[in-house]
Amino acid sequence: MTQLLIRLFVRNHEDVKNPAVRTAYGNFASLVGVVCNLILVLGKLAVGSLFGSIAIVADGLNNLSDASSSLVSLAGFRLAAKAPDEKHPYGHARYEYLAGLVVSAMIMAIGLSLLKDSVLKVFQPEPVGFSLLSVGVLVFSICLKFWMSRFNRTVGQAIQSETLIATAADSRNDVITTTAVLASTLLCKVTGLDIIDGLVGVGVAGFILFSGWGLVMNTLSPLLGESPDPELVERIEQKVLSYPGVLGVHDLMVHDYGPGQQFASLHIEFPAEVDPLDAHDLIDNIERDVRREEKILLTIHYDPIVTSDARVGVLRVRLNEKVRQIDPALSIHDLRIVPGTTHANVLFDLVLPAGYTGDRAGVIRQLREFVAQQDERYVCVIKVEQSYASTRRDK
Image (cartoon, rainbow, N blue to C red; front, side):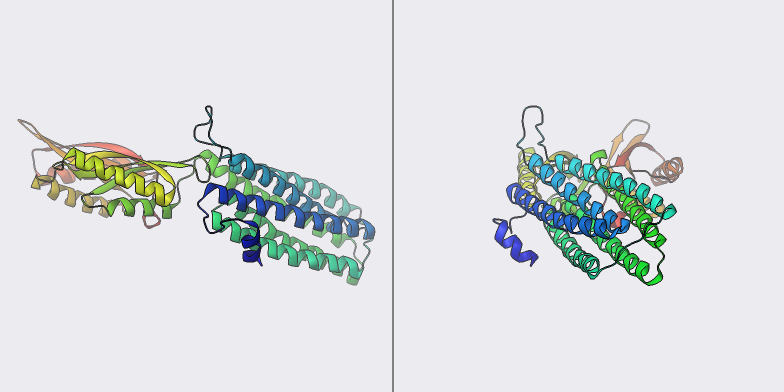
């Protein structure tokens, strides 16, 4: 059914990297969320008020927060689609992240309100009415929320939207909480213990707060500047390395200004003996191809590498092997030998992963000792850098 709806309401639905198509997906998913959640809100509030069930009312208010979340998501997708302007040359795509953060905060607020009401119901239990109508509304809610979870996950994965994937997780959580409410309604009927309704309400509220906090962390992360997707990093690196003459890639940085608005820069190592015009032409080709395939504006810095000096090549191989033995997460680049009258400086950059907790001083000492062992005239000069991107194999 999901695919049928997508084909009916999203034009050119297969072109998911097209910003206009992506926005259409987001708008459609948000509208579906609003309609479905409002149906559930009206049904649960009516039944919960009629039969005096705080758990059903709590679950209905949770669906009200979901409907509000869908409206915020809709606004986020529409604002994110705004074209760049003079004050915001990188576009407005981060509005989608902000919408996700607002949604998460709303979920937390609803959870706190429900917790207060449910605690009062625990200490002052009230009779809970039972009817097949209330059971039917809850069963319908479980089925609809299960479909909404799959729907939002399918759309979210298609357009790589963290907001919709979070919405899918929230719908999945609703299946769990509504199942708990249904169990509460049945237990109150069987046991006659009305306190169960309040206890389940507390449990539902706690689960909403726990899920909301997780969503806050997930939506806040890209705004703070999280590391890029390791699979994206690997695709970019492998793409660049596939071009003839490229010896290595390092210092990759990816700057995220929202979905579809990513910028990147990296250094490539290229033989110094190659004509600079040829090297420049190849770099232009790489930047254009990455832009076309990954929708990322890539800027490349060219590092010339002397390949005619055998000493440099041999030392590079040995140093790379030594670094891997010390810690596979480390790497080196920009190795060069600068000869002098009394000694030769061996210069290179040592790259540490972000948050590296190893013995940095010990690593530098081992590398200096290793270089000195290769030739007594060598003096090691190491520049330490931090890595801003990594592939899964590095972890």
